[in-house]
Length: 108
Image 1 (cartoon, rainbow, N blue to C red):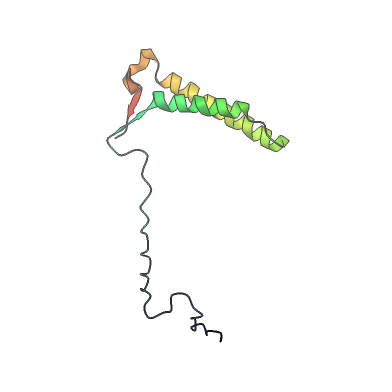
Image 2 (cartoon, rainbow, N blue to C red):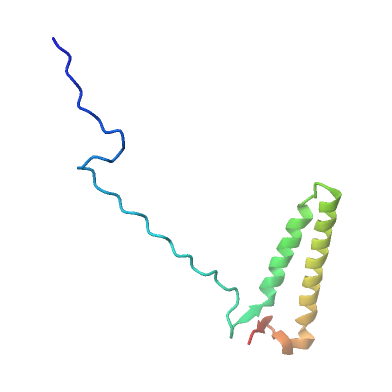
């Protein structure tokens, strides 16, 4: 019995006349980054202080690999702690004029 000859194959994928043509991908349009605070809203200092406390707690567990990195960590911890103290000073019960009992600071 004689061998059957195989049909010729195309060297390129999808070059067949019967193959459907692929559509080119549409370019995605980047959306602008969302802004944190919109005019006319307020900044909740109580929530900000709680997040700062979480950050200080996380940084307390972290150890710098070099003395320079360790000093930067210490500096960051000190600054965040100072911000927490400043928030506490701004929103004392005696001075509720600034942010009120809810610790919301109005943003014009």
